[in-house]
Length: 334
Ligand code: AQP
Image (tube, rainbow, N blue to C red; front, side, top):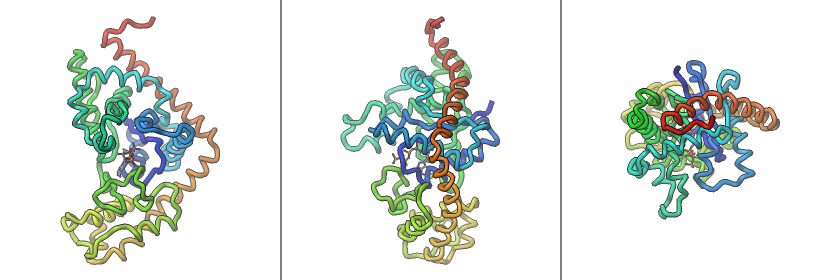
């Protein structure tokens, strides 16, 4: 089977990067693959979370999935902590992965800050849990943003080492990262060299799912740019991170490529691009945020989808985990 697995953390401030890099891809992939989309709350707690907010934000990510167009009948939408296979398999895979591999992970270096000794152990082993998420379902394809590429490579290494060490040839498929299109790494609107991020202290740095038309227009208007006109060729964007970012966002929202956008805007300034970009973003995001608000008004509906999804996810993961335990030599509980 060709199976997709991916997830989003319920850490608030869902933004355009999450949409273009991940969620919009989920929506199209669900038609071609058996798909499992997770709200990864176990990942969220690798940094401190307010428990009451975490619950609301979990429903918010589920609402975003639904509002974006993921069909809960066809695809599985569920919450990570509701299926114990994730945490159980993460332990076993943590005994397969090597410390040296984790030491190379750049996200940990970025997120841990200056004093690495003070970061949680969970933040350090985050990529092992991510490998468990994917491998618990023997997922073959994983749509993610560019920032997750290194973690995906680690998941492949862990799968291969498990298969090899445990003499279980081809037990875990090596999951393929799917990182495609013009917006796999959406950058901050305030700094073209920093990733658009949930935790950026500046609200102007990101377009969120809950921004209204005025906020979107204002943020693009204030977006950092440069004084030169846009180039007519793609190569002309090199060394111009802000221009590259805005053109990439435009292309992704319009469902086209960078070349096509430049054939329209090349030679013109940002004053021409920005209002059109805002218009396009409003056109795409407004229906999504309206639908999200509507869904959030009925938490019991979201909860029933998450409960049903957890049962279906568990039904896939449980036999795989059982096989893993058998391979490890654990005596069955009976
Ligand atoms: N800027 C981005 N461009 C493209 N894709 C992105 N993703 C995140 N940021 C961008 C992708 O969205 C999916 C879910 O991300 P997440 O919620 O698991 O993780 P995150 O990377 O923690 O999100 P943030 O906004 O970057 O949070 P902070 O502020 O904590 O750093 C993933 O597929 C991710 O690649």
